[in-house]
View (cartoon, rainbow, N blue to C red):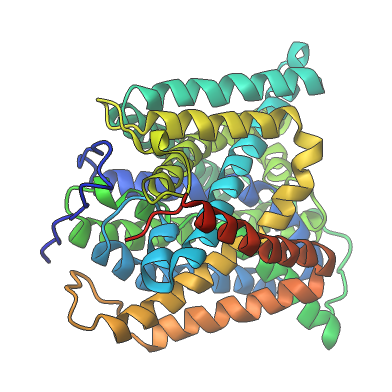
Length: 454
């Protein structure tokens, strides 16, 4: 497959991103962005909702299938429109300025907030490992330091940022594989101590449990599209973006299924149910007194690569919006190392505000989570729109199984959003309220001339 040359108009070109990234980075950013705190916190809640191994594992399979179907479709857009900025680029190109505005701002804010939340978790876990660091202020201080350290690495250039991503993601994947191997070699005793058999829900209760569990699984898989944020910086986007997406998604699916099989083997479904950190409970069974230390060290390592990925991604979203007139023009400038420095500084500053006012912004993060799947929905719609509107445009990669695979992903997204609205109505109404407010803001920017015309 041949890549399509990037064409960026003179009015857009305020700096030069460096085309130096390959499949290795694509895999690293997907693994680093996807495997974070969710795999530690969600299995216990899901086991409580679906206390049967087949149902429990089935939901993880469905979540992985959704991610794979999404990758099949988004890979076409990433190869076809090789400009950095993620789903914002697709929505603006296919659906217009307002759709791009909505996707871009919600994606940027939620990614900055995610960086803050994960940084705070690192501070919390570090306090558990070292009592002298235990406390809310100490956790916040650690979170600030971690966020700034990764920002400094990325400020030096994309080579530094990508190298950090490659190293931390590789260590994360290796650590999970070691934990999985240890679980099957040394675990199993915990599962034999099960004394209760929770009742499996039936009827509407079962449907509700399936929806809530699938919601957790999809959120835990979220991040599988990480490489499309860097399409402009990938050496051969027509070839490397599809390879990265499929390789990354399949790797995450395998790791998640193996982790949950290991949890079932070590703890059993009943002992897992309701655990805040099921992986931590399993580590205590496997490693005894050292289990909690090993678990928290693994969690910190896992989350470091996520923070690096969040910084990289939020920076590219703000950069792309800025060169299209949705933010200050300065944020579209790129330093000699290939980093949009002002966009990085602004993104990290927002993340630090989330850290400092963490309790205040918890609600914001919950509300913006609604937009994760909403943005995917618009991306899947974009595939259909562009196939119809630009049939002759070169597509180095075409979505396998189109239109059926894209339609399945789109239907799954819509059903998921309906389920979220039904199961979490209050936060969904807040999200819909933000959606309603966003249009007047967009029109104001348009009126004042802040939004550029193509």
